[in-house]
Each structure stands twice: as structure tokens, then as C-alpha cells.
Image (cartoon, rainbow, N blue to C red; front, side, top):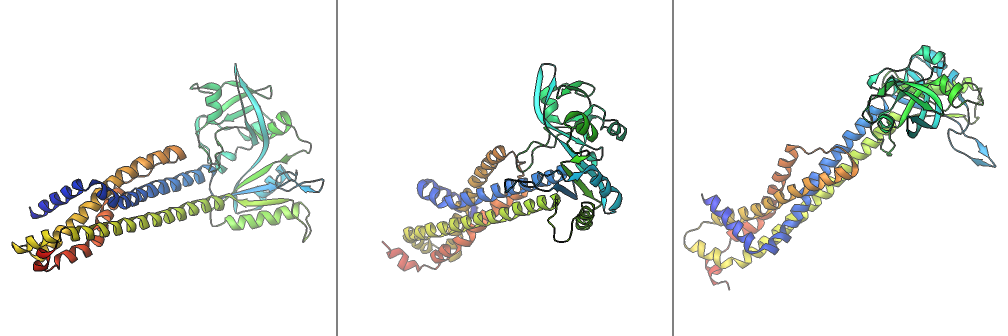
Length: 408
């Protein structure tokens, strides 16, 4: 009952000094809210990046063609036609650390169905792309090796294209026109969402590689591809696969020692993992800032409690004169500090949840707010009150009753 009375006295004190109490709690409110927002958004960011890693595929290498030079200006990677489907086949057949290989050839094209049309990316590739990129199907199937061999006019459609052309209708079995050429939709891909750079992975149509090369876009050089995606057998063999592909393509392209290579290899899994590590580091950095805010809030509580002790010196003297012990005075002021920080913690939790929802809406990342995080934030706020309220409470408990009664 004594504890409850102390709590009621603390609440009355907060109510009597609303502005002072609000300013005192501000640091705690900001600190607790920041902890919740950082944990929610940081965890959500890691989940989103993990989802994107899974969406892109695991253990992936991207082989890009070399550069071209025009008027003395180097045009960048991918501008020279130096990769062929023969390179892709050689990688498949000669490198044991590689599981699947998917060469790509394609570009943007206008797609038409009935009175609807949509501009999208049309990629010519092989059936292995479904395992390289971890594609799943809502309905239908992937095109087959036989359809690649005869350059069949079939396609697998991403969800964004399907939605724009067909709405809620199932596109499988329908006839669309790509570059005015009829294609039968044989598959509808499960949505993958956007990449970390904002590119829509579902705004795509996949067709057989030979169809893209011979029927849709043509090629000045037979068999040329724009890039090759390679999946290693495991994460452990990823570096080995990268080294062996580099050696193989160097031999196939007849490059001499010291000669500039006409291709480059990028480790996509490593790049995405680095982004995940960066998100984790930023999360911890922002948590550190939130911790500093809590410390500042705790110092504010200590300061205001010292002021309160000075203001209530005579009250302390009267209580001691009628029998209150030092531990009673210590408990009273300590409870007031804890109540102050706990109320700030509750307000901070509410503010943190609201802010986290707003941030999740803006970034379109999943929101990860857990009950342990909320409970932990509240307990931290209470601990701040105990830690920073102890010194003022102890100072009040050590007052001399006679001197306290004489205080004006």
C-alpha cells in the first residue's frame, strides 16, 4: 500500500507540474521511440534484403561482356558483344562447381493484348533460368528445351505485365503480341517485388533464347548474348566457380597475359550480403544514438529530481520529524523518478509504434515490432529512472531533519 501511495504522490506531482514533467520525459520519450523505430525498421530492412537475396537467387555470379570505345570514350561494361551462348554452354559443360547457367538476350518491347498494351523488358533465356532465379509459377509452366530448339513463340509472364494486360484474368493460354508477333502465354510468375534499387522484378516477359535472337530482336553476330547468370553448386564453391569461369573465358576469347579482359564477373550474392551487413551496421549505429537519447533523458530526470528535493526539503523534514525513516524518503523519491521515466516510456512506445508504421509505409519495407522489444523498451525506461533517480533520492534521504525543518 505504501508503494501505491508513493506512486499516487508521484502522479500528482507530474500533474501539478505538467510542463516541467513533459520536458523532463522528452528525452525518455525520444529514446524509447527511437529504439522501437530502429529495431522495427532495422529488422524489417534485413528481412527485406534477405527476401531480395532469395528473389534474385542464391550463389549467383553475373558474367558481363566488355566495353566498347567510341571517339576515345569508353562506354562501360556490357556495351561490347563479347559473350555468346557458346560461352554459356562451355561453362555448363566444363566447370564442375557450376549447377545452372542462364544466358540472356533481349530488350524493351511493346506488348499488346486486345485493346491493352504495356512496355516491358523481354528476356530471351533458357529453361534453367527458373532455378537460377528461383522463379515460382502461379499457373502454367516454363518453356522447354524443345521449344528453345525450334524457337517457339511461347512466353512466361511476370506478375506486373499480367496485371496490366489481363487484370485479374489468368493469362495462361492467351495470345499476346510482342513486336507485332503472336506469342502464347504458357506461364505466370509468382511476384518477386522490387530490388533495393527500386526496379520492378515482375515487369518482365521470358521467352526462349533462340526466339529472342532469331525472331524478335535479331543479332548482328550469331549466338551473342547480353549477359550470363551462373549459379554455383554451393556458397562454398562460389569463389572457385568465379576463378574457373575467368580462366575458361580467358582461354575461349584467346586473351594474352596482360591483355585487358573483354568480360567481367560479379558476385551478386556477395553484393546483396554486403547490403545486408550495411543495414545491420546502420541499425546498430541508430540504436547507439537512441541509447544516447535515453542517457540524456536520464540526466534530465536526475536534474529535475534534484530540483524537487530542494523544493521539498521542508516537507522531508516534517516527514522525518513524525517518524519517516531514511529508507521511506529514499523510496518515495526513487519511485517518483521511476514513475516519471515509466510514463515517458509508455508515451515513447506509443510514439515509436506510430512512427514505425509511418516509416514502413514510406519505405514499403516489412514492419517487425515484437512484444519482447516493447517490454524491453519499457524496462529500459524504468531502469533509467532507477539509475538516474537514485542519487537525488539518496540525497533527500540523508537530509538532517532539524536543518530540513529550518529550510526556507
